View 1 (tube, one colour):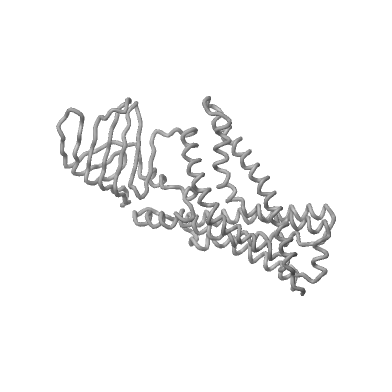
View 2 (cartoon, rainbow, N blue to C red):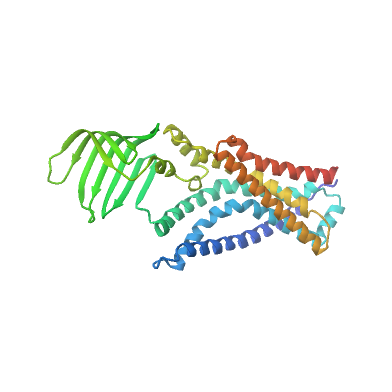
Length: 368
Protein backbone atom coordinates (compact mmCIF):
# COMPACT_ATOMS: atom_id res chain seq x y z
CA UNK A 1 0.00 0.00 0.00
CA UNK A 2 1.52 3.31 -1.13
CA UNK A 3 1.36 6.50 0.86
CA UNK A 4 -1.11 8.99 -0.61
CA UNK A 5 0.46 12.34 -1.48
CA UNK A 6 -0.85 15.65 -0.08
CA UNK A 7 -1.56 16.86 -3.61
CA UNK A 8 -3.75 13.85 -4.31
CA UNK A 9 -5.56 14.30 -0.98
CA UNK A 10 -6.26 17.94 -1.82
CA UNK A 11 -7.48 16.96 -5.28
CA UNK A 12 -9.84 14.30 -3.95
CA UNK A 13 -11.08 16.70 -1.27
CA UNK A 14 -11.62 19.39 -3.89
CA UNK A 15 -13.66 17.01 -6.02
CA UNK A 16 -15.91 16.29 -3.03
CA UNK A 17 -16.30 19.98 -2.14
CA UNK A 18 -17.22 20.93 -5.71
CA UNK A 19 -19.82 18.16 -5.84
CA UNK A 20 -21.10 19.12 -2.38
CA UNK A 21 -21.52 22.76 -3.37
CA UNK A 22 -23.39 21.87 -6.55
CA UNK A 23 -25.73 19.38 -4.87
CA UNK A 24 -26.37 21.78 -1.98
CA UNK A 25 -27.29 24.59 -4.38
CA UNK A 26 -29.71 22.41 -6.36
CA UNK A 27 -31.40 21.01 -3.26
CA UNK A 28 -31.66 24.47 -1.66
CA UNK A 29 -33.41 25.75 -4.78
CA UNK A 30 -35.84 22.82 -4.77
CA UNK A 31 -36.57 23.38 -1.07
CA UNK A 32 -37.46 27.04 -1.63
CA UNK A 33 -39.60 26.14 -4.65
CA UNK A 34 -41.61 23.43 -2.90
CA UNK A 35 -42.03 25.44 0.32
CA UNK A 36 -43.28 28.42 -1.68
CA UNK A 37 -45.80 26.22 -3.49
CA UNK A 38 -46.99 24.79 -0.17
CA UNK A 39 -47.39 28.28 1.33
CA UNK A 40 -49.29 29.39 -1.77
CA UNK A 41 -51.66 26.48 -1.31
CA UNK A 42 -52.26 27.32 2.36
CA UNK A 43 -52.83 31.04 1.73
CA UNK A 44 -54.88 30.71 -1.45
CA UNK A 45 -57.91 32.26 0.28
CA UNK A 46 -55.96 35.22 1.65
CA UNK A 47 -56.10 38.31 -0.54
CA UNK A 48 -53.41 40.36 1.22
CA UNK A 49 -50.50 37.89 0.97
CA UNK A 50 -48.00 38.65 -1.78
CA UNK A 51 -45.77 36.14 -3.55
CA UNK A 52 -42.64 37.96 -2.38
CA UNK A 53 -43.73 37.50 1.23
CA UNK A 54 -44.16 33.75 0.73
CA UNK A 55 -40.77 33.43 -0.97
CA UNK A 56 -39.26 35.28 1.97
CA UNK A 57 -40.90 32.83 4.37
CA UNK A 58 -39.55 29.91 2.35
CA UNK A 59 -36.05 31.41 2.50
CA UNK A 60 -36.34 31.73 6.29
CA UNK A 61 -37.21 28.05 6.57
CA UNK A 62 -34.57 26.85 4.10
CA UNK A 63 -31.58 26.56 6.52
CA UNK A 64 -33.67 24.44 8.88
CA UNK A 65 -34.73 22.09 6.08
CA UNK A 66 -31.16 21.86 4.77
CA UNK A 67 -30.10 20.67 8.21
CA UNK A 68 -32.58 17.80 7.91
CA UNK A 69 -31.42 16.76 4.42
CA UNK A 70 -27.68 17.38 4.96
CA UNK A 71 -26.89 13.62 5.16
CA UNK A 72 -28.52 13.16 1.74
CA UNK A 73 -26.53 16.09 0.35
CA UNK A 74 -23.27 14.51 1.52
CA UNK A 75 -24.23 11.07 0.20
CA UNK A 76 -25.18 12.38 -3.25
CA UNK A 77 -22.05 14.58 -3.36
CA UNK A 78 -19.79 11.58 -2.67
CA UNK A 79 -21.63 9.56 -5.31
CA UNK A 80 -21.19 12.35 -7.85
CA UNK A 81 -17.50 12.86 -7.03
CA UNK A 82 -16.74 9.12 -7.31
CA UNK A 83 -18.74 8.90 -10.53
CA UNK A 84 -16.69 11.68 -12.10
CA UNK A 85 -13.42 10.11 -10.95
CA UNK A 86 -14.44 6.74 -12.39
CA UNK A 87 -15.77 8.08 -15.70
CA UNK A 88 -12.50 9.95 -16.23
CA UNK A 89 -10.56 6.75 -15.30
CA UNK A 90 -8.80 8.65 -12.53
CA UNK A 91 -10.05 6.26 -9.87
CA UNK A 92 -8.61 3.29 -11.82
CA UNK A 93 -5.20 4.95 -11.98
CA UNK A 94 -5.29 5.87 -8.28
CA UNK A 95 -6.24 2.35 -7.21
CA UNK A 96 -3.70 0.71 -9.53
CA UNK A 97 -0.98 2.81 -7.87
CA UNK A 98 -1.69 0.97 -4.63
CA UNK A 99 -3.85 3.58 -2.92
CA UNK A 100 -6.37 1.90 -0.63
CA UNK A 101 -10.07 2.59 -0.29
CA UNK A 102 -9.46 4.19 3.10
CA UNK A 103 -6.91 6.61 1.66
CA UNK A 104 -9.28 7.56 -1.14
CA UNK A 105 -12.09 8.22 1.31
CA UNK A 106 -10.04 9.97 4.01
CA UNK A 107 -10.36 13.52 2.50
CA UNK A 108 -14.14 13.13 2.14
CA UNK A 109 -14.46 11.70 5.65
CA UNK A 110 -12.48 14.58 7.16
CA UNK A 111 -14.49 17.17 5.24
CA UNK A 112 -17.78 15.46 6.17
CA UNK A 113 -16.81 15.56 9.86
CA UNK A 114 -15.85 19.24 9.55
CA UNK A 115 -19.16 20.02 7.83
CA UNK A 116 -20.98 18.22 10.64
CA UNK A 117 -19.17 20.25 13.33
CA UNK A 118 -19.79 23.51 11.46
CA UNK A 119 -23.45 22.55 11.10
CA UNK A 120 -23.68 22.21 14.88
CA UNK A 121 -21.66 25.26 15.88
CA UNK A 122 -22.57 27.78 13.18
CA UNK A 123 -25.41 26.71 10.88
CA UNK A 124 -27.73 25.37 13.58
CA UNK A 125 -27.91 28.62 15.64
CA UNK A 126 -28.62 30.57 12.44
CA UNK A 127 -31.21 28.04 11.23
CA UNK A 128 -32.92 27.94 14.64
CA UNK A 129 -33.19 31.73 14.80
CA UNK A 130 -34.57 32.02 11.26
CA UNK A 131 -36.97 29.12 11.82
CA UNK A 132 -38.30 30.84 14.96
CA UNK A 133 -39.01 33.98 12.91
CA UNK A 134 -40.60 31.82 10.20
CA UNK A 135 -42.94 30.15 12.71
CA UNK A 136 -44.11 33.49 14.12
CA UNK A 137 -44.70 35.05 10.70
CA UNK A 138 -46.41 31.94 9.37
CA UNK A 139 -48.73 31.78 12.36
CA UNK A 140 -49.65 35.41 11.81
CA UNK A 141 -50.41 34.87 8.12
CA UNK A 142 -52.09 31.47 8.24
CA UNK A 143 -53.37 30.68 11.71
CA UNK A 144 -54.13 34.17 12.98
CA UNK A 145 -54.55 32.79 16.49
CA UNK A 146 -56.57 34.82 18.98
CA UNK A 147 -54.40 33.69 21.89
CA UNK A 148 -50.64 33.85 22.14
CA UNK A 149 -48.60 31.97 24.71
CA UNK A 150 -44.98 32.10 25.75
CA UNK A 151 -43.10 30.48 28.60
CA UNK A 152 -39.45 31.17 29.27
CA UNK A 153 -37.02 32.48 31.82
CA UNK A 154 -39.04 35.73 32.04
CA UNK A 155 -42.03 33.70 33.24
CA UNK A 156 -45.44 32.98 31.82
CA UNK A 157 -47.01 35.33 29.25
CA UNK A 158 -50.49 35.05 27.77
CA UNK A 159 -52.47 37.36 25.50
CA UNK A 160 -56.13 36.62 24.80
CA UNK A 161 -58.42 38.62 22.52
CA UNK A 162 -62.14 38.38 21.92
CA UNK A 163 -65.04 40.72 21.26
CA UNK A 164 -62.68 43.65 20.77
CA UNK A 165 -61.20 43.40 24.29
CA UNK A 166 -57.88 41.90 25.28
CA UNK A 167 -56.25 40.48 28.38
CA UNK A 168 -52.52 40.15 29.08
CA UNK A 169 -51.49 37.70 31.80
CA UNK A 170 -47.99 37.57 33.24
CA UNK A 171 -46.60 35.37 36.02
CA UNK A 172 -43.08 35.72 37.37
CA UNK A 173 -42.72 32.03 38.22
CA UNK A 174 -44.40 29.00 36.71
CA UNK A 175 -44.35 25.30 37.54
CA UNK A 176 -46.48 22.27 36.78
CA UNK A 177 -48.33 20.39 39.50
CA UNK A 178 -50.75 17.50 39.16
CA UNK A 179 -53.52 18.63 36.82
CA UNK A 180 -52.77 22.35 37.21
CA UNK A 181 -50.25 25.08 36.47
CA UNK A 182 -48.95 26.91 39.54
CA UNK A 183 -48.21 30.62 39.01
CA UNK A 184 -46.44 33.10 41.24
CA UNK A 185 -46.50 36.90 41.08
CA UNK A 186 -49.49 37.12 38.74
CA UNK A 187 -50.47 40.31 36.86
CA UNK A 188 -53.53 40.56 34.59
CA UNK A 189 -54.17 43.68 32.48
CA UNK A 190 -57.50 44.01 30.64
CA UNK A 191 -58.04 46.55 27.85
CA UNK A 192 -60.94 47.48 25.60
CA UNK A 193 -61.09 47.69 21.81
CA UNK A 194 -59.27 51.05 21.87
CA UNK A 195 -56.50 49.70 24.12
CA UNK A 196 -57.78 51.69 27.10
CA UNK A 197 -57.15 50.16 30.51
CA UNK A 198 -60.24 48.45 31.92
CA UNK A 199 -58.87 46.60 34.89
CA UNK A 200 -55.56 45.50 36.46
CA UNK A 201 -55.35 42.53 38.80
CA UNK A 202 -52.35 41.75 41.00
CA UNK A 203 -52.18 38.37 42.80
CA UNK A 204 -49.62 36.77 45.05
CA UNK A 205 -50.05 33.42 43.34
CA UNK A 206 -52.61 31.36 41.45
CA UNK A 207 -53.39 28.28 39.41
CA UNK A 208 -54.51 27.63 35.85
CA UNK A 209 -57.38 25.16 36.08
CA UNK A 210 -59.96 23.98 33.56
CA UNK A 211 -61.33 27.19 31.99
CA UNK A 212 -60.21 29.74 34.60
CA UNK A 213 -57.40 31.14 36.71
CA UNK A 214 -57.82 30.76 40.45
CA UNK A 215 -55.99 33.71 42.02
CA UNK A 216 -55.16 34.13 45.70
CA UNK A 217 -54.63 37.33 47.70
CA UNK A 218 -55.62 39.69 44.86
CA UNK A 219 -55.62 43.46 44.42
CA UNK A 220 -57.98 44.81 41.70
CA UNK A 221 -57.48 48.30 40.24
CA UNK A 222 -60.04 49.99 37.96
CA UNK A 223 -59.99 53.57 36.63
CA UNK A 224 -62.03 55.87 38.87
CA UNK A 225 -62.66 53.10 41.43
CA UNK A 226 -61.01 52.41 44.79
CA UNK A 227 -58.62 49.49 45.02
CA UNK A 228 -60.31 46.25 46.02
CA UNK A 229 -58.65 43.36 47.86
CA UNK A 230 -60.03 39.85 47.77
CA UNK A 231 -58.72 36.59 49.27
CA UNK A 232 -59.65 34.67 46.11
CA UNK A 233 -60.66 35.58 42.55
CA UNK A 234 -61.63 33.46 39.54
CA UNK A 235 -60.64 34.81 36.11
CA UNK A 236 -62.09 33.03 33.02
CA UNK A 237 -59.72 31.92 30.25
CA UNK A 238 -59.82 29.75 27.13
CA UNK A 239 -56.29 28.43 27.68
CA UNK A 240 -55.84 24.86 28.89
CA UNK A 241 -52.90 23.10 30.53
CA UNK A 242 -52.35 21.10 27.35
CA UNK A 243 -51.98 24.31 25.33
CA UNK A 244 -49.48 25.61 27.87
CA UNK A 245 -47.43 22.43 27.58
CA UNK A 246 -47.49 22.72 23.80
CA UNK A 247 -46.50 26.39 23.96
CA UNK A 248 -42.97 25.58 25.06
CA UNK A 249 -40.51 26.60 22.39
CA UNK A 250 -40.22 24.00 19.66
CA UNK A 251 -36.85 22.20 19.77
CA UNK A 252 -36.19 23.33 16.20
CA UNK A 253 -36.41 27.01 17.22
CA UNK A 254 -33.64 26.66 19.82
CA UNK A 255 -29.97 26.53 18.87
CA UNK A 256 -27.61 23.75 19.83
CA UNK A 257 -26.00 26.04 22.41
CA UNK A 258 -29.30 27.14 24.01
CA UNK A 259 -30.89 23.71 24.32
CA UNK A 260 -29.06 22.52 27.48
CA UNK A 261 -30.10 25.65 29.40
CA UNK A 262 -33.69 25.36 28.20
CA UNK A 263 -33.79 21.66 29.14
CA UNK A 264 -32.60 22.50 32.66
CA UNK A 265 -35.25 25.25 32.95
CA UNK A 266 -38.04 22.95 31.74
CA UNK A 267 -37.12 20.18 34.13
CA UNK A 268 -36.83 22.62 37.03
CA UNK A 269 -40.35 23.88 36.21
CA UNK A 270 -41.79 20.38 36.29
CA UNK A 271 -42.36 20.10 32.53
CA UNK A 272 -41.17 17.25 30.37
CA UNK A 273 -38.10 18.17 28.32
CA UNK A 274 -38.04 14.87 26.41
CA UNK A 275 -38.49 16.39 22.89
CA UNK A 276 -35.70 18.91 23.55
CA UNK A 277 -33.36 16.29 25.03
CA UNK A 278 -33.94 14.00 22.05
CA UNK A 279 -33.43 16.82 19.55
CA UNK A 280 -30.18 17.87 21.23
CA UNK A 281 -28.89 14.29 21.23
CA UNK A 282 -29.84 13.94 17.55
CA UNK A 283 -27.89 17.08 16.68
CA UNK A 284 -24.84 15.60 18.39
CA UNK A 285 -24.87 12.68 15.96
CA UNK A 286 -24.54 14.86 12.85
CA UNK A 287 -20.74 14.47 12.28
CA UNK A 288 -21.00 10.68 12.72
CA UNK A 289 -24.03 10.47 10.42
CA UNK A 290 -22.27 12.45 7.68
CA UNK A 291 -19.23 10.17 7.86
CA UNK A 292 -21.56 7.17 7.69
CA UNK A 293 -23.19 8.55 4.55
CA UNK A 294 -19.74 8.90 2.94
CA UNK A 295 -19.17 5.18 3.51
CA UNK A 296 -22.65 4.22 2.33
CA UNK A 297 -22.12 6.18 -0.90
CA UNK A 298 -18.67 4.64 -1.38
CA UNK A 299 -20.14 1.16 -0.98
CA UNK A 300 -22.15 1.73 -4.17
CA UNK A 301 -19.89 4.01 -6.23
CA UNK A 302 -16.32 3.02 -5.44
CA UNK A 303 -15.99 0.99 -8.64
CA UNK A 304 -14.43 1.18 -12.08
CA UNK A 305 -17.69 0.10 -13.75
CA UNK A 306 -18.16 2.30 -16.83
CA UNK A 307 -21.53 1.21 -18.20
CA UNK A 308 -24.22 3.84 -17.74
CA UNK A 309 -26.92 1.27 -16.93
CA UNK A 310 -24.81 -0.07 -14.08
CA UNK A 311 -24.25 3.44 -12.72
CA UNK A 312 -27.98 4.14 -12.85
CA UNK A 313 -28.72 0.95 -10.94
CA UNK A 314 -26.08 1.78 -8.33
CA UNK A 315 -27.46 5.31 -7.94
CA UNK A 316 -30.99 4.01 -7.43
CA UNK A 317 -29.79 1.47 -4.86
CA UNK A 318 -27.76 4.11 -3.02
CA UNK A 319 -30.64 6.58 -2.86
CA UNK A 320 -33.02 3.82 -1.75
CA UNK A 321 -30.59 2.88 1.04
CA UNK A 322 -30.43 6.53 2.08
CA UNK A 323 -34.22 6.72 2.29
CA UNK A 324 -34.34 3.52 4.33
CA UNK A 325 -31.86 5.02 6.79
CA UNK A 326 -33.92 8.21 6.92
CA UNK A 327 -37.15 6.34 7.71
CA UNK A 328 -35.31 4.24 10.28
CA UNK A 329 -34.04 7.42 11.97
CA UNK A 330 -37.59 8.85 12.00
CA UNK A 331 -38.86 5.58 13.46
CA UNK A 332 -36.33 5.54 16.28
CA UNK A 333 -36.99 9.25 16.88
CA UNK A 334 -40.71 8.52 17.29
CA UNK A 335 -39.90 5.70 19.70
CA UNK A 336 -37.72 8.10 21.65
CA UNK A 337 -40.49 10.72 21.84
CA UNK A 338 -42.87 8.07 23.18
CA UNK A 339 -40.24 7.07 25.78
CA UNK A 340 -40.20 3.54 24.35
CA UNK A 341 -36.45 3.85 23.72
CA UNK A 342 -33.89 5.71 25.85
CA UNK A 343 -32.91 9.09 24.43
CA UNK A 344 -29.32 8.09 23.69
CA UNK A 345 -30.34 4.89 21.88
CA UNK A 346 -33.07 6.61 19.84
CA UNK A 347 -30.69 9.39 18.75
CA UNK A 348 -27.49 7.43 18.12
CA UNK A 349 -28.78 4.12 16.74
CA UNK A 350 -29.31 5.26 13.09
CA UNK A 351 -25.88 6.96 12.81
CA UNK A 352 -23.98 4.09 14.45
CA UNK A 353 -25.79 1.38 12.46
CA UNK A 354 -25.21 3.23 9.17
CA UNK A 355 -21.53 3.68 10.03
CA UNK A 356 -21.09 0.01 10.94
CA UNK A 357 -22.85 -1.15 7.76
CA UNK A 358 -20.60 1.01 5.60
CA UNK A 359 -17.46 -0.10 7.44
CA UNK A 360 -18.43 -3.77 7.23
CA UNK A 361 -18.99 -3.65 3.48
CA UNK A 362 -15.81 -1.71 2.73
CA UNK A 363 -13.70 -3.94 4.99
CA UNK A 364 -15.14 -6.99 3.25
CA UNK A 365 -14.43 -5.52 -0.17
CA UNK A 366 -10.96 -4.14 0.55
CA UNK A 367 -9.52 -6.61 3.04
CA UNK A 368 -11.87 -9.59 2.82
